[in-house]
Length: 414
Image (cartoon, rainbow, N blue to C red; front, side, top):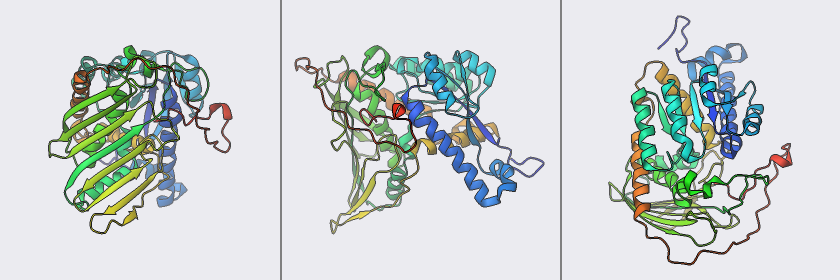
């Protein structure tokens, strides 16, 4: 659609709000949003010059902008809002939706609080990007998805790893047939999450170790990314069968601290996932392999919230390893924000929701159901409860110009 001035009818901005101002929103989502905004503005300047930038941005993609945030902890909300020009902290979600009328809401509360936040946004006609897993239990997830369907709003799960440039390179190679017939996807996605884990060394409520709020442990927290990636990398061939083994091996909390999942896609590709909260971060712990009859792609240190990592292609005939280039600077969060903002604008321009976003929420719900059913069948470990284990935290890398008290420790980063 084009307006009378000849520009695309999509809005120049996508106005974002955040519900839940913890470390993921603070250290990953907001930097990704700011990176996406800066990149879009720079691209427009490069193509059209500074004088034509406003129209150029309108003609290409909406620029994301954070307008409001809310959290049960006012200090966390104030901190996040203070990092985004013009953003404001709101006392509650209802007040935020009424006063600021955002185009999209990012939900990053503990899992048990996803449903009320998503339902409130959907009722207000606001698009929703909800962190994984969809909810702490299946019933809550089903209600959440049904509310979005009834309201007709654009809604998606925040699977940022779909957008990592290395994973996109893997997807493209598989689609082009470069690996031949794909036979297996193997994922190792682990971290160190002790009971008193903190993202920055300050007192922190580690709700991920609380079954009432998290709904589970390492498996429920980390497996959704892997299950999603299998289908994304294989062009829609999702996992259709799944079994699980869980362990309570290292950390003395009531949720699992490790798990192995084995599954099969509808197209008969085997999938294995090793997930853990009990792997020290100095060890190799993030690896993705896609195996085919003509070759194998191996991604190292691409799983997680950060840019970078390495991707190698191994030739099945010669055994040679060849680096596969990809943009190591682009944050998967930035790409996720950019693409979801564009989808929001597309829907506002009249495109049906089901055509605006390639991964429908009902598909994410099906994977969530598959995971919960597999975990419900997993026999509890017969091992005695573990004693507390102390493992030295990895020294965080310092970013030039960043306040030391706000640095994010590598420990527990996923």
